[in-house]
Image (cartoon, rainbow, N blue to C red):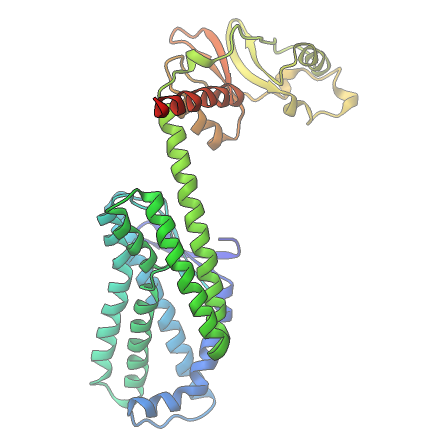
Length: 376
């Protein structure tokens, strides 16, 4: 998340604080400090609180305690995810609480339920412990601990609202996924979640504007989760189809190559004539680089007659073998943001080139064949 500062790691997970956390802690400190005496009276705790510094100091302690509780909540999710072999990229604390950036959501409903309930259970645990200790503590510590206990109960309850991105939305999706496919379960849970988001916003409009903001956040988060899930499903479908085809079936051959001592101008003239945008650079029958039209843009026009392509080519050549499947190649193209790879046989011979366009054409044919099979 942009604007975040890493403060350390726990269990190999980077912990980051977003600058908006300062704003929300200040607001919560002010809100608690201004209403602390009323809350103490409501709980029946007899405590003398001096207005001003003492009340706001206690408010700051409670606000910090709340966000520490949020951190524990997110750590509970993350630890369960790690036990399932899922990578957790980071935990960020920000204005609306905490986010555990988990690499992938388990498609198994029971696993998703276990991971989702871990956070609320952790919050309930903190709430019970805080409340228990608070009830036997002196008045001032009692007030702080009981307040934190109540806040953790609220945190657990809020996260169990059946709407994304809250845990309750994920639990609801997992329950639906026990009876139907993952995408349909997500869409159904998202529809219910949007209904809750609208309801929260309506209530907030009459009672507390902060609830309107939360409602909007939930509505947007729900839509984002539904979109992400449909995109993942489409990605899995693409991967399944591309796994069926080896590179040798769709690669371009024979391969147009260029020597390393060609000038940039000569290369550009050749590229325009052949109408290709990228070429392997070959010396002594060995691929030593890849040159594209994009690489030549680094050179000023007055230098294109003196500069050889070996000076601007990409020297770290990644390649695949003829038997490698298209899903691996497509994935690597996305990771490296490149549009082509040479295909080199086991004995080191350059036997073809494969581009994004080659794979997209193959995918189109596979999709058409797949549709025909469904009709038969």
